[in-house]
Image (cartoon, rainbow, N blue to C red; front, side, top):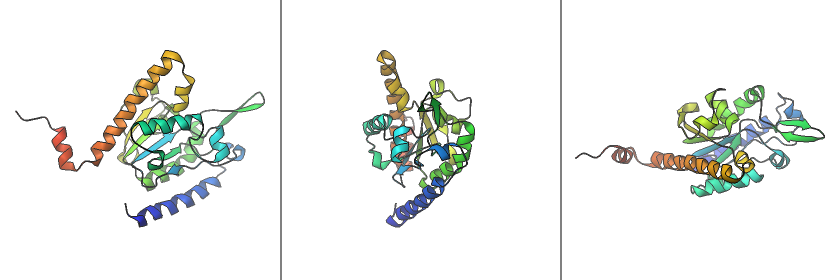
Length: 221
């Protein structure tokens, strides 16, 4: 990717972030501290999409910087992908909350909120043009694959995502952190299996076509 193209994408995303920051289509746009647009390499081969910002993300204006973000960084590092080489964002750019007593708690975004934010997400996908999309959690996966998608039954399966980009879903890091004991170990095992598929897909897409055909064709005896 040329330096000029990288700079062009960076400028576009900066302007798009400002536009998203001025959005007040949803009530959560009036309640949040910061609009959490997204961050990372504008020429990333992998785009990671979660459901929405949490409390720490809302405070700092950056995606995946709380405990779930720390775990995501470790997950990416396990498949040799530094955070700075990936583009990370969410289906909605403002923190969805629910009042629990006197405390605001995170909640999953509702369909109307995701629909209002979808043009910003579509723009990001169009500009970055990743080779692979990793959806984290059921709400993010459902935003691409429909309301009947089941994260427990259909994670780890490749789908055709937007712009024909290969898309795979796995459990959200926050979900992993909520598990305990054997349940956490099993969830980690499943996520690791999904991450290895992401690594393999990226490696396969990097190969020249003739090399990919050589490895994918059965041997002739």
